[in-house]
Image 1 (tube, helix red, strand yellow):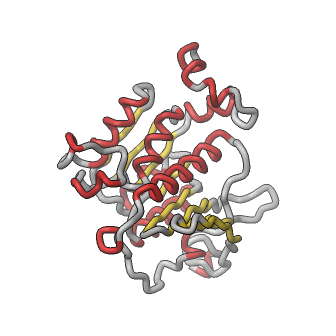
Image 2 (cartoon, one colour):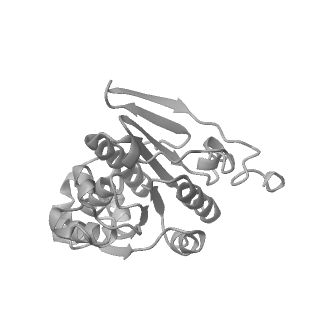
Image 3 (cartoon, one colour):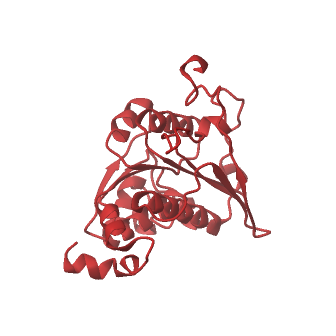
Length: 256
């Protein structure tokens, strides 16, 4: 790090859990964020502020007036712009030293396969089941940890799915272990059900927290656990997750 970087990231460098080495790893890392809306906005801003070297944003939507209640990376002057371009502008205004790649298209299998081949962590800030499953498949295939978040009404959840081999040879669960790909699921959209504005900030910030921990080597990640948040009762709890040996994504080849 040069002198300017040491000054900018001094509050991270002061932390025993991160220090100079951990911050350097952050600066050299690459993150993929799928979704530049309610969850992706705070996640992207915090990763940019923390100095993640290269951040790829994927979203095919445009900024709408109804987004501004909660999607803090956007502004009235950018209504109608692609969300990835709007968020990129906000990120670079915060930290011009990061490289932000804006991909204004839907995240399909082919795109994710290309992007995950050169990423260190992925953040699922999307709002539909199909995209979540596609991102999970790509993360398992490329050995990239996935930080998953969701929020609707006043309820939120955060998890880290890291199926890379552990020191003892075991592996953690993937997203499909918890939510089987072929299960009947109704996509619940905030456009229909509503969402409490600060909740998406809480969940997106927690996703950024977990991503930065993974990139820097700080602390214990949420891998193998699911964090549940009830914002209206302000109740937070964590439950353990188990890997499904018969998972069609991360299970034994005979199970796929």
